Every structure is written in C-alpha cells, then in structure tokens.
Length: 113
Image (cartoon, rainbow, N blue to C red):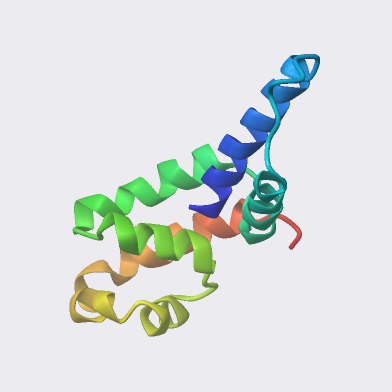
C-alpha cells in the first residue's frame, strides 16, 4: 500500500538524519523521488489503521492484491470499487456489506488530498 510504503520510507529518511554526519552514507536522489511519490499516493492518515480495517476482508476471501488495490485506489462507493476491481464482482452479493463497512471506516481516515 502506498500509505505503508510512505511510512517505511519516511522512517528510513528520519534515521538518516541521525546518520547524516557519516559522509559515506548517501541516498540517491531516486530515494527522495520514491518517498515523494509514496506520500502523494497515500490517501490516509494512518497506515496501521488502514491495514487493520482492510484485514477484515481476508475472512471474505479478498486477496492481498485486491486489498492493496482498494487502499491505493481509494474508492468512495462499493459500485466504484467493483468497477475498479472486476475480480471481486463474482462474489459481490457475499461481500458487498463487508465492502461498504470497510469503505465507511476508510472514509474516516482519509487525509485532505
């Protein structure tokens, strides 16, 4: 998930501030580009809360890849989610209530994009 990647990369960046006195430790410009990209793609205020909310979909047999797509695409409605992730359509009747609950919880965590 972009929000999780942003947290990890920011943690590395923060640790490098401490290590910045060591001239042998240098990160390429692409690291900062990756961090900036991950932050731009992050739609939520707390990656841990997002992960906790999305994990509930695993009991409905939603794959890790589909969960990641949900987090990164940030759909607002169940209809939008099913349009963006066609692989979930075949189980729509079985998982729609759970999807709506998850989207409702995720909406509470949205950052001010």
